[in-house]
Length: 318
Image 1 (tube, one colour):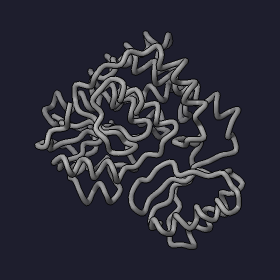
Image 2 (cartoon, one colour):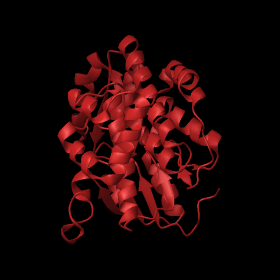
Image 3 (cartoon, helix red, strand yellow):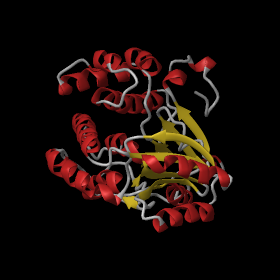
Image 4 (cartoon, one colour):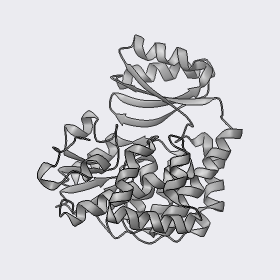
């Protein structure tokens, strides 16, 4: 399946962020699409999803990850029902690869829930035992040449490090040992960068190949992948994804390969995409300059979805 040269709209499922229960639960309870997905997910997991999500409020757990998945997919479904969304291309940077695979028809919802919960369990267990002293630091306004000098110094010092995400030409997420974090932040600021969030666990590094193998053997081996109904773009290199095997590898590669969002943007532009619709709470992918300079960006959020059409918030607002 090739991406059509006349494509005009891409749907983006964002990477996950810790979302407080109150910010998502109201939508999950009031949206008809969300209620149906919550009920199905609860049956699969063996517990009531929203009750568990409330108990574990604000933490990265199976319930929060599956709730985020459900919220993203329900926001997209509701937008379709309102005739506000008819995407031609699907992309999901980082964690967003899982709802993207489900939305594109490459994996059924039940398997998407199992994939999300199983992947998260293995991630939590792995990073409790390995690289537990490692964090990822995001930084904006840091030109590529300045980033290269920082990385060169880490190499010269023999320090483990990796770039988890290239978010824009001057925006990256760098993983280091926590003891080197103050140095890293200082170097970023000294070079004109704007350090933002510090995150854990780290992700998107070849160093985590053992985790990828574990997830592939213990989680993905039990899932059924199909060729996507909608074309997809790989968030790691901007390549076209059109077979079941490619979808499977793309999602698994989220463990070991950096996200390269500028490559995705270049592919979408080449294929005629002019609008990005971000389905889910997003503080990154739809907001960076390479997105806003190249596309009209609309963000579907729980808050916006609950506003009556006559009072609908402008595109891009929460």
